[in-house]
Length: 142
Image 1 (spheres, helix red, strand yellow):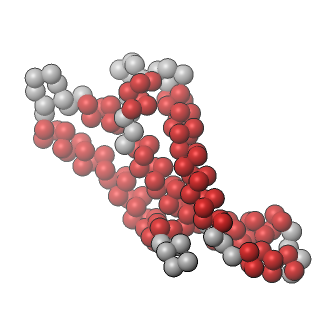
Image 2: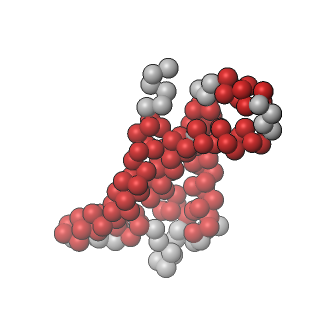
């Protein structure tokens, strides 16, 4: 597990999975029970109710969990710093630490690398912005 990206991935998943379950469970509890009762009255099976109603209504909450998880993993420094010891295997935050030395910090290179490393986050937010906003405000009126 040490010096492998698989170890970092497993630790990140085990850290973020409870947060995602908590957010999606909280959203699912706010779905009206009348929708599921009406689907049962129409003869829909439990799987069809789950796949056609519950999953489609929870897309905003899943997008919110996806964006939060992506940002947390993208900016994570602690777990990779603890688990990755070799110079061959690095994550982006560890690579950004290479611009800082004991007596000198190369600020122009560091700032340009930070700007370049934030581009994937901006792209993910632009594509999921509609779902992110609706997921954050879905329980505001209840």
